[in-house]
Amino acid sequence: MAEGDHPGGLFSSVRRVADTCVSSIHNRVELLSVELQEEKIRLVRLLLWTGAALFAAFLAITVFTMGIVMLFEDDKQRKIAIIGFGLVYALGAVVIAMKLRGEVRNAPPPLADTLAELRKDLQSLRSRNDPNT
Image (tube, rainbow, N blue to C red; front, side, top):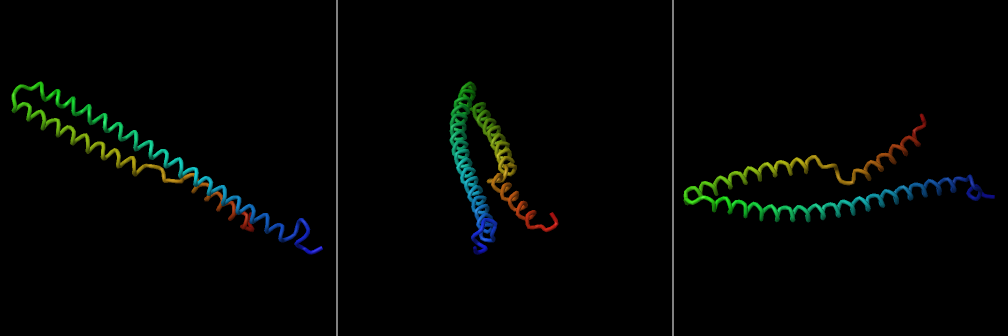
């Protein structure tokens, strides 16, 4: 019987290690695929809701502003009211832009779970190859 033919042989061990590596890579690629799909769905949903909210807010602000401006009888007062609303809306836009910038900067990195699993795999492989453990 050749050495590669019995169950505990070198080729059997190499085959098990290769199978483990391929399975591990397959699992990580599947996780990556799932995470990418989830991120895509989340992003599309976020964009749709953002667009709807912006449209509704724009309509509400326009009607509200025009209603208040129409309450003034004098043209000079109307002009002052329009300028005042413009300044308030500009300030609101700056605050919102700063908030959005903070959200983008503080967002978790994409594919964090996949990267964490790959780090665990690397640590596991290193600990197996370390003769001191």
